[in-house]
Each structure stands twice: as structure tokens, then as C-alpha cells.
Length: 608
Image 1 (cartoon, rainbow, N blue to C red):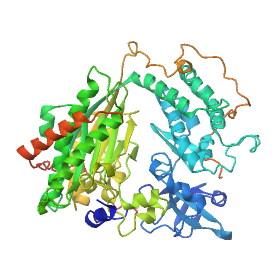
Image 2: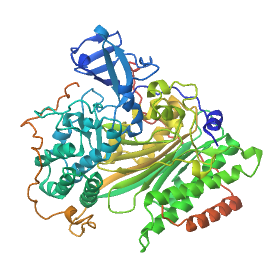
Image 3: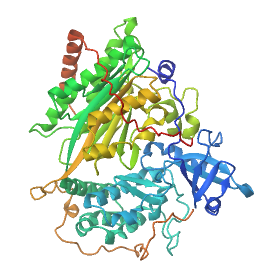
Image 4: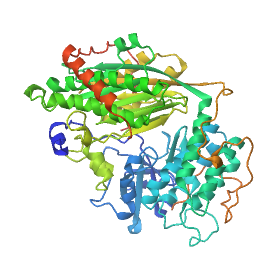
């Protein structure tokens, strides 16, 4: 099926996403000179240098029809939204200057910057230190392709909060991002320069971490820098040190037709009946059926039923004595393709009542192995969020026209959301051949206790999760509130505040416990120089003097400036098809309501 087909049939009415964190970072030399307390154009309040508060977030920000070339990287890099800011608007200032407003920046709800990488490294665990450095290396290539890799060279531009690393703004490679006395001509933005910056952080690392990653930094500073080798060394170090904490998950899923009543086209896993068979599920999922009750309900239920068969086979295969021939990502994609084709085959049967049915999917799997990791995948606009008492992080981007328009560099996100077909899906399961599906798979490292929330758009619409995501999470983590009661509160909250669509919630309550590391053996060594040494190695020799950190660095704002055999999958797919067609699929019973929950809704109207 084509995108036009999806836009025609699977467009849902949706309010433009509200601006949840109304504190914005403002880039540009002119903006940095505006003192706190100033009102800008009767809309923005300056609360600190380069930090503005939007007094009227319901009004669209000013954006040109054509985004200037210098700001295009914010669009092309939109898929890296977990780590990079998003262009919000352009605000004219006096003397013809323009302020660049950015959202999704590392600012908390009070408008304070997250801790700098330099500050946070001093007290972080070994696994967390390695994780942040590895994220920097993973961002290097996409930022280099857009000419903004310099963003990773100014250390005060890098902010961290638990497992997330986020940049304040994107810096052009043609400008020197370091406040040191070097010649820009002789020190261009390069892997060698990145290696020197990371080398300057070694005094802040645990001695064992500094010794483990020294070969990686040496590889970056070599005459022919090898990014891949450095990434492999850091990844190996992460696998080794992350085993010190064991991840346990508790899963649950609830679904409800919403206040409009009628049939429920959503399906999810694990419901109460599933938990009766497996109290500790290894995966959770939410599917939102498309195409009306006649088809949407069948499509979502078929997807869940197919996943039960496919994922059980996948997990059994991964846990067998034989080493898996393919990566987990490849196997998971292959499983989803089988489920997609299972639904598509129903569409091809020619029955008019089932024509054009499809479903969205968001799925989380506890990654097999000793590392505290989850594997996430999604198709459509059902979403995944990571929730802690202090933060709400959206982990997925919708497969819709708005997101596609931004990633292609045509419009900023706020403008794309207001397109007539902005909410139209660009892909869904069952409406196209598997060869036409783009199935993103990402790993998520659990570095602190929290809750992974999967939901259909009946819950995520209108910014509901972004607004109330932190509510009651602390009560679950402390044991005062059960995961079941917490999930039911989400159902009731959505029914009260929106309720226009079916509502589904699936959640993993993630806990970390210290484990005895004495029996843990180091993973296979990438190469001899990448071994995890028992003692600190000799100092690394470099061709030029490495960047030196000042004696004290305050946490202030930066200065402006597959080879996998498919035979078993086809066989399982055939069994699944026979099972589903022969036995039929039972209807999902809505979750029971709970009287008088604490919905986390403010007693007084908000200042919006």
C-alpha cells in the first residue's frame, strides 16, 4: 500500500501536541545579551541567560516557510530526538537579529539545565560513565554528516540525566567550539580532536574505566583514527561493567474502549489471563487496530496472537545451547514480518468486510543476556515512554506524515504537526508487504529504576503522558502502589480527560539489584589492545598536547555561540495462520474500573 492510501484511510483527529516543557533554550549571540526579567515580543519571559519561558504555548511559534540552510541539521537529525534539541521557532529581535528557539532541550520543569557531563562523571558508576562516552561516539557520524560534530567537542554543551545524554544546541563545524588557545586551521573538527577531548576526561573516570577505555581513545587519536574500533571497545566495556546490576521486570497490560463505549479495536499483552500462565512475562505490547471494528479489531488481535507464537520461538532459540546464527534485531524483524504477512493475507482474501484492516504496534522485549537492557520496536503511532519520578522521556517517533516531513528536511516539527494530513500514518502492519516496512529497533539500557510505558494514541494524544508521566511513579518504586493500580489510574485519567478513543496501557516495572560480580567473566576480547586490563596502562602518547580542562568548571550555560534462516519462521507463521483461522480469536475484555483513583490532575486550572 502507498502512503497516500494510509493518509486516506488511517488519519485520526488529533490536537497538535502541546508544549509540555515551556522553558526553551535560545541560541544566538544577541539572545545571550538579553537580561533576565525581560519580556520579548509580549510572548516570552527571559528567566535566565538564553532560557526563555513561553507565556502563550497554544499559539504557533513563528517559523518561515523555508528553513534557513544553517538550521537544516535540526530537521535532518530529528530521528535522534532522544539526544538532540528540536527547532521550535524563530523570534525577531531588535536591529534585525533573530533568536533561535529550541525545545526538547536538557531543561527540567523548573527551567534549570541538567548537570553537565563533566560534573556528572565525578559521581557516576562505571557503567554509567562508559554509557555516556559510548553515546558520544554513536552520535559522531550522524552529526559529522550534517556538519555539526563540533557540538560534541564543547563539553559544557553536553548534559546528562541518568541514562540520557542530550545536547543543548547544534554547533557549526566551521566555528571553533573549544575555549582553548589552539589554531582552528591546525585543529579541525576530527576524530583526533574528539579523542583529545575525551582523553581530557580521564581524571574524572574510575581508574578501572580509564584503563579499560584507554585503547579506544588511543584508536581515536591514531594517525588513521578508527571510530568502529573505539565503539567496539566501549561496547565491550559496557557489557562487562553493566553486569554488576541485574534487571528484573514486572509486566502488565490493560485496555478500555473509552467513554464512547462500543467495540475495542486495541489489543495488548499481557492481560490478566496471560499473567495467569506466565507471571513474569518477557515482553509487553500494544496494538491499535485500523480500519473500523470489522477489520481493526481482528488485525490487532491477530498481531498479538501471532507475536505470542513468534516471540516464544525466538526466545527459545536464543536460549538454546546452539549459538544464534543471527542478531536479535534480525530475528525480531523476521518475526514481525511473519505477523505482518499474516494480517496482509487476510486482506488479500477479498472479503469486503475485512478490507483495508491493519494495526499499529509498539513492543518491548527484555533483552536476553546479563545486561540490564530492553529491546524496543514500533510500527505506526503507538508509543513508548520511560518514566521516573523526575522525568518523562519519549522513546519513539510516530510513523506519520508530520514526522516524515521533518526528517526529509521540509518543515520544522511544530509546522508539520499542523499539516492537514500531519497525523496520517506513513506505515502500519498488515496493509503492505513486509518488504515495504521500515521496522526500527532500538536498545534501551535501564540505568535506574523506572517504568517503561507502552500505549495507544488513545492515551498519548493531547500530551497526556508528557503532562502526567511522573505522577505516582515514585509510589510504585517504593511499593506503596501496585503496577496494576498505577496502570488503572492511567485508564481512568484518559477516560476523564480525553476518552475519545480506545485506551491501552502496557508497562514494565524495571528494578535493578546489585549482583555478586565475582563469578562474572569478561566478554570475549575485541582485539588484543581492547582487553580490560588489570592495572592502569602507560600514558597514551599523542602527537599534540591534549585539551586541558580548567581546574574548576561550573555547571553554567555554555557561551553562546541477515544471514538468518527463515525456514523456522515460515513454519511457525503457517502454524499461527492455521491456529488463528481455525480456532478464532477471542475478544478482549475491558479492564475493570476503579472507583475514586488519584488521577494526578491539578486541583486548580493550569496557567495554560
